[in-house]
Image 1 (spheres, rainbow, N blue to C red):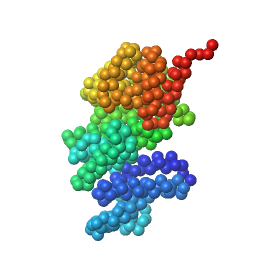
Image 2: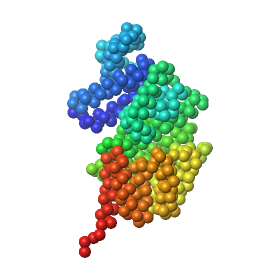
Image 3: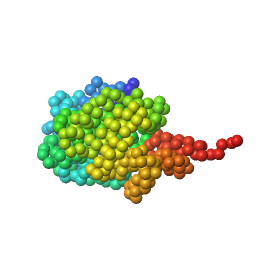
Length: 420
């Protein structure tokens, strides 16, 4: 019997490969996505009990083809579409035998990424569709990443699929200016997928390692294809330098350990060395981009043997550059922490007051948690406890919620008069 988590990780890795294989062969993106999802669901039910088949990818593709045939038969234009698919489908697949070798064996995950980021789609739709099709995120997770209602995101994804249906799916990798534009969307997608894996927006686990591993795998692949692109190198460096801390982020019971309390000897030194080498080589090549600057910030954190040894003035300077280059509420939030560490918590709180005017952030749990941290440093324990508790109520991640509630309880206990 195979563990549920092992099966889940394997299916997450294979999902974009199966979808890519079906779309490359049959071209009907919306039908292929439905078919691949049904195949993944069947595997999630059968494999934990029966064991993983010898060729799991071939098994999924074969089941996906069967589901696709079922869908085609149910369409009003059943006969025409069946004939089209029958021409392209080897007899072994129609008979339910393992998938054949050749094009179905290639991993089309990267081509699928670029295909989902086509120019007919708006940038938010490109990212949402790719997170759904390649990253395997649920509509709820994508909505949380964008900060919009789930129903809004569902409509966005549906419209994106309709556009793909009308225009067809192109597996060719673009060139020139079009490649640059679509590359920005691809990098953003990979960034969001990694972040969802490093700190899940909801659920009982703090991290989803399979998501982060897939984002790193695809970014490595992209870096091999585009070795001179500094932003691709910067994003890979950022992922490696951040993921290096994963072993120290949770206790055995899964509870969160903040950066200041982590055992830094548990950090993955090989990943830190690789990430540092990447960003050190990328920065001198030309104008720094946002991923390079974020990687440089991560490198400064990773190079410090203790929290007290962190070069906060350098981090603040990098955040100043990042805010000028790519203004973002979460960049401003993290910069406020650096301001507090360099110029004192009161200065950090003033920076947060400016950010609170942004409606997207005013009641966000991360802003509340950051304000609680700075208020505690400033000696405002009661106000800090209230912010921690409010942040806990608003967080959708159980480990984060427990950590924030524990901080509130700690400060409330400290504030109570001691019995004499």
